[in-house]
Length: 362
Image (cartoon, rainbow, N blue to C red; front, side, top):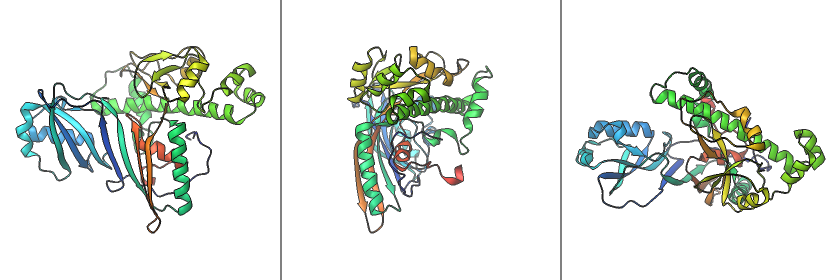
């Protein structure tokens, strides 16, 4: 069961991820130059995954799959705006793109293709139904509190398949020692990486709750920690407690460094300047050290070498949060932005305190 960071009571609302209720727009990492050998397309799509969009583009233009660059994957069950690149030579073939699910909003050029991860973040507009007057006030209060305090950066339910068990297949594939075959196996192994990350993050949130809510003596007994350590952790100004050896990263992007000075790093963390990272185990990735390593190692798989590893922010801050409530229809529109790789549904789940995965998919 997911560990939530905030202690407010559950808030009810009706959420469904559909093309009418869920809108997301990419925020590019940089401004495109307007000239170069690569065509940049700003595309609006609905009821279509990024993989399907790429497939449609390859069939229409004759380009190969690896010719098409993109910054991130977007869900099928949404209306999305994202940027893709392809060699300029295929521009004239775009006349063959006839599906009504795709609209090219803008075209420009750039000197290089778009690569995975080249995003600042994503802008979301999400419509909720069944929102009472009281719930609307509570949602706004909770959302604004999370803008200031931040939220755990869990992978969303979309990562784990309809039964939430795709990571088990990924674990089996990862530990087989065989070379991965195709994108499906890569996605399954990535689900296993994500499961380990979420499990580690949930444990860290649980530890932080204990430190924040229990007297030092009781917390030390519950966690089997020395009382001196508990007091040092409790003195940190932010909810999510940092440990020596945590791998910190400049926020919202930047270089990695190990936590050495607890007080100085905790201050920067509370000021949204740096954030701790969690392990996505795999090849060529850095592990944490000292106390943080002992908390991380139960959720590490050193046999996983089929995919490249990485570090992922453990804690993020939603931005530009606003709401619009219609009491007659009991609908509420939420607008906010999140850094790249973050899931809007995890933000909504932190507000509602419930699993929002569709019942049919569970």
